[in-house]
Image (cartoon, rainbow, N blue to C red; front, side, top):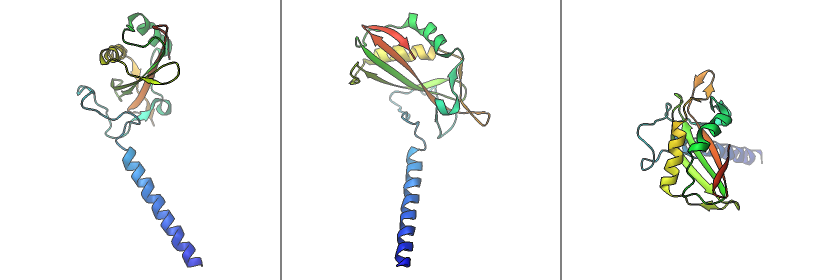
Amino acid sequence: MKSKLNIWLLVSFLIAGILTLWLYFKLTGYIWDISYDEAVDSEEFSPCGEYSIYPYYNVGTYHRGGKKHIKKKLLSKINTEGLPSNGLLTVRFVVNCKGETGYFRTKMTDSELKEINVPTSTLEHFYNLILELEEWMPGKIKGTAVDSYAQIVFKVEQGKITDIF
C-alpha cells in the first residue's frame, strides 16, 4: 500500500515538475501579452534583455511627469478620426531599459466592452503620440534597469477623448 502511494506521489511530482518547466519555457521570451511581430514592430526598437519584460507595476516603470503630464501633452494633439463615438482605447507598449518605447499593441472596446476594430492609420497616430513622450523611467530590479511594459488608456465619449489614464 505504501509503495503504491510513493509511486503515485513520485509520478505526480514529476508531472508537476514537467508542467512547471513547460510553462516557464512557454512564457520565457514572451512579453507578457506582447510578443515581437516583424510585420508591425519597428526594427529600430529593441528590448535590452533577451527574454524578460516585466509588468510596469512590478518594477516601477513610470513617466517622469506622471499621468497629468501625459494628459497635458497629448490631449491637444489627439485626432479622434476613425475612433468610435464611445469606448476605451488601451495602448500597451514596452519601455526598454533605456526608457525608449516600442512594440505597441492596442485594444478598443465599446461602452458594452465589446472589442472594436480601429483603422491602422488611427492606431499609428496614437503610437506616434506616445513615441513623442520622452522621459520614461524604466523599471528596476535590485537597482538595475529592466525592460517592462506599460499602458495608456484613452476614454472616448461622444467622439472626444475625455480622459487619459
